[in-house]
Image (cartoon, rainbow, N blue to C red; front, side):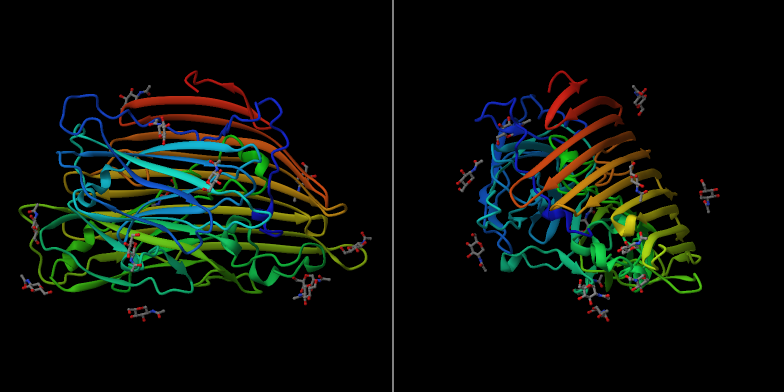
Length: 551
Ligand SMILES: *[C@@H]1O[C@H](CO)[C@@H](O)[C@H](O)[C@H]1NC(C)=O
Ligand SMILES: *[C@@H]1O[C@H](CO)[C@@H](O)[C@H](O)[C@H]1NC(C)=O
Ligand SMILES: *[C@@H]1O[C@H](CO)[C@@H](O)[C@H](O)[C@H]1NC(C)=O
Ligand SMILES: *[C@@H]1O[C@H](CO)[C@@H](O)[C@H](O)[C@H]1NC(C)=O
Ligand SMILES: *[C@@H]1O[C@H](CO)[C@@H](O)[C@H](O)[C@H]1NC(C)=O
Ligand SMILES: *[C@@H]1O[C@H](CO)[C@@H](O)[C@H](O)[C@H]1NC(C)=O
Ligand SMILES: *[C@@H]1O[C@H](CO)[C@@H](O)[C@H](O)[C@H]1NC(C)=O
Ligand SMILES: *[C@@H]1O[C@H](CO)[C@@H](O)[C@H](O)[C@H]1NC(C)=O
Ligand SMILES: *[C@@H]1O[C@H](CO)[C@@H](O)[C@H](O)[C@H]1NC(C)=O
Ligand SMILES: *[C@@H]1O[C@H](CO)[C@@H](O)[C@H](O)[C@H]1NC(C)=O
Ligand SMILES: *[C@@H]1O[C@H](CO)[C@@H](O)[C@H](O)[C@H]1NC(C)=O
Ligand SMILES: *[C@@H]1O[C@H](CO)[C@@H](O)[C@H](O)[C@H]1NC(C)=O
């Protein structure tokens, strides 16, 4: 953010307890994915190495490989990403594609001089329609090696196949992406610099359709939840430089033929260099290895999409503009930049609905309700001392067709303070909402809650030091819909509560840098009837308590 937290690196000075040769195991706390079936199906035990590559000078040069489906019947595909890294390096965003379709978004942990390793296992069966065909695999992990940033990301990605699940998965999958796989390139859109509009013809026997949205803020938008009103960007220029604008509110919008089809109020993801790196070693932030992709059910739109014509799909991201009199409007753009794709999942049936041609569903989207407050106080010498600001937002949206209705009810607030001439900042943010599909054979409801409080204080007297504390959570309650949700990561009901809290300290001087941190992580989940709980407490790179004895 202000001082580019990504530049905050850890030198690995605190690994004294470990042998010099053991790689520190970093991990995300998540519900373990069941082992591949040990049944005697043809595919049991079949594994393919999809990626085996050391990502060094890989910026704009993704790894490209060809995939051929194994010659056996499978309905379940799991992947295992295992990475080692040694030296210094930034955290990096990485995206896995099958052709032009993004199938997974992850990020890397920051290495130490003695080295780190991590593994993440994920069910990828939602993409069976693609796994059944030959594909070009593209894994984009843009890394840069220099004299200072020496860490490679040495990566192995293995896929395991089996026949076991019986979960219905989509019959066809279409990308809302830049579709650059033919040029061996990553297909993400960069927003706002690129136009995200794509055209698709939807097969006429489609009976259900869902769009998943992958959107990640980077650079001036990485810490969007701590951004200020644009008019305050220069309030503390003398102490901390530019503050990024468009307020701390973001909305990601999906448009079909120029009509709003639903919105996403994003989860405040924090990567492993975020705020202060001491929070995130060895426990990385919530979802850092598996960025959930929220879903917008577009089944009510099928009435106008099944006319054998092409229709446009577009993803936009907006922050807010706040006028001097406090009036709040969408900015219809954001700072640079967001990494964006969408995926359209289509389920087909024998007897597709027959609609009068091009019936436009009924959309009820009243303007969101916003409030904004802002106060800038000067010290006795007339210099800016304290900025307080807040945004609240509420919105409902419903789209309704003959058989289906999809509705959203969203609520957001953020209270920010910068004091000490901007050297200390705290934000208290809360996003919650409920999305509901009614009608048809598989109604579905997803409710979520994302609380976050983060306080960070800078000292620039001797180099840079940061002391920070935070507490954050992710709660999801979902009834389970069709297929494996790219958001709940399961096919059935989900009841998830997870929380992280911690303190971290970082100091760098011309000679040295040190980092400390303490993080407590609580995870309680019941996914498709399987429950899993874990509590972990880590202090200065060591796990001091872990309720899961398998680790
Ligand atoms: C994941 O793959 C690595 C090797 O790439 C292997 O050592 C590890 O055992 C695998 N883990 C799981 C859970 O499959
Ligand atoms: C990663 O790969 C690089 C380049 O191939 C190699 O020099 C380095 O030793 C490897 N690092 C680890 C931690 O395996
Ligand atoms: C794309 O990558 C593949 C595999 O490395 C290579 O065979 C092919 O020539 C490349 N195509 C282009 C257009 O660069
Ligand atoms: C984006 O592209 C679409 C289709 O090509 C076009 O209709 C639209 O005007 C473009 N939008 C912008 C903002 O340039
Ligand atoms: C104080 O803040 C205002 C509003 O952001 C800004 O225009 C002004 O330049 C700031 N003053 C100083 C001395 O930085
Ligand atoms: C911010 O400060 C820099 C130098 O520190 C100066 O060049 C720039 O003009 C200032 N910007 C504003 C808008 O005050
Ligand atoms: C649908 O459109 C395609 C061309 O895009 C055409 O070949 C096909 O005959 C059309 N199908 C029907 C049922 O009209
Ligand atoms: C849907 O129609 C396509 C042709 O457009 C056909 O290939 C596919 O088998 C049909 N799927 C179902 C489930 O009927
Ligand atoms: C007011 O703020 C300015 C700029 O940050 C600082 O130089 C000055 O010492 C402060 N004055 C007092 C009385 O704290
Ligand atoms: C949205 O949720 C709030 C809080 O749960 C509730 O009071 C309100 O009635 C809901 N609005 C709609 C339109 O569903
Ligand atoms: C952040 O926390 C510190 C210590 O708890 C406190 O002194 C400081 O005022 C807080 N900063 C803000 C902006 O609230
Ligand atoms: C997990 O959820 C299922 C329903 O999906 C419920 O029957 C079961 O009691 C739950 N288990 C626990 C431990 O809460």
